[in-house]
Image (cartoon, rainbow, N blue to C red; front, side, top):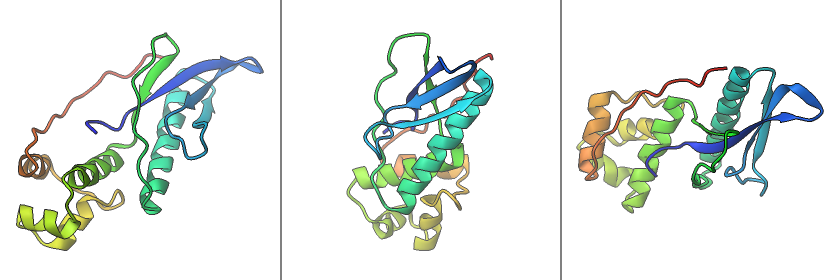
Length: 155
């Protein structure tokens, strides 16, 4: 998993034509995805980010697998939703370790760091990894670190 970004449909609800409803179908805890809403498109994006972040944190706390995001469907109503960066980083570190079939202790040994330090990096509430640390993790697992900034959507 390169990024934790999920396709979301932003549309006007017929019952509330002024506001926006957001549907994120690939978070399938209940088989139908999650929905939220906002009075403006900007608020709808923020609410979608909060809802996605909350779902990912709940899955992390329950040790449940993270739903694999699908591609972005075509159409003007569709856009990516990203979780909070601290949550995304911690879950991506965990995913990288798991894809390499390693335990946290094995990953800590690979990086030559204390186990408790490594545990913090996979914890969305405690992850404080610097860019230097993230680059070190990426290299240890045979990857390159890719950091980007993306423009916000206009309201």
